[in-house]
Length: 459
Image (cartoon, rainbow, N blue to C red):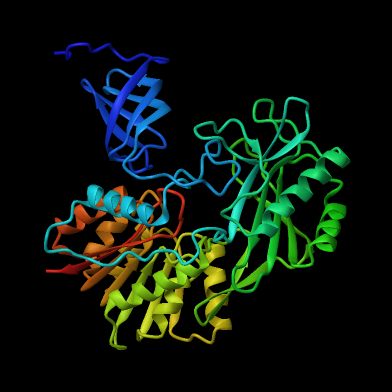
């Protein structure tokens, strides 16, 4: 039954709502009659006036754009970025950093609902809440006058972009390179790819800037149309920005918006840059996955090793090992480490990184984790400890099954998605494991993103 004064929500309608919780994406959640209302930019304790953008009557859910913050539970601060409020990235730049950590801790507990017996470790706050990202992908489009734009997406509008001035999450040089490529494209008639017509050339600009070595890589992603100016552009970029070690041209012929293609060429300089995590040096190629926050990755990997409780005699399995970052950190404390990763290119990087750091007790296998873990079990391999660092969707259900069958004594789970972690933890708990430790690592300050370390023991 509807409450007195209740008006069925509709797009464009106004709603006053008290925010009581958060979604995993950091949107505030409040109630209006039987409807759940999601309001971007609000946090628990706020009272806001919103205007409905979308209403899903069957799900009793609506999304509202904030019109006014009537009262606030956290005193807001001035955002550092000129694009705040438009950009879809930094949702919490107006929230003091200590409060961001508190909100993320609440999100983790709200999602995982740990038992009282689970130890909650102290959150690892980022030493640098701004200019910490070592890689950023920028989209390309055109404005109303037909000029090339290079920037990011407005909140909830993936079909459009805004022209970037300066992004406060990346080092200053990255923003300068964005401006230089945009200026060059407009001066030399380099066209932007059109998502509707699938015509035009430039699709993405990706910049990697190594935190510890300051080496820079520029990746230009285009359609299959001829890019006659690419050599000249690369030479000009390297002349103007001497820290650029390599310029790579990659061609994406597909309609899907992916910033790395199937055909690649090193236009100028080298095909990789180097960065350091702790005592280890890593080659980072254009397609390599490398943790976006180098300083926090160091702290997180060291914590993973600590949670594994290694004495030096253990055999450790590193599932979804990528280019071998965690494997190399584990190598100092384990007898043997086996890394598993679906990407053959990442495995080649892992093997090379292992060799150049004189690590001899790591080996790597390429293939889907859901297949390889079953094969390892079938051939009688056993591991004392397993570490798993899956993509955002979590572990494949057959990979979880394979881990259960391998029966390591301890599993340390590195998660970038608490909801997926909760699902996998529930499955592992149903098959003889018990969650005993959780810890938040703030890898992406100014955003609601939560990186979580979880340890499970076989009972």
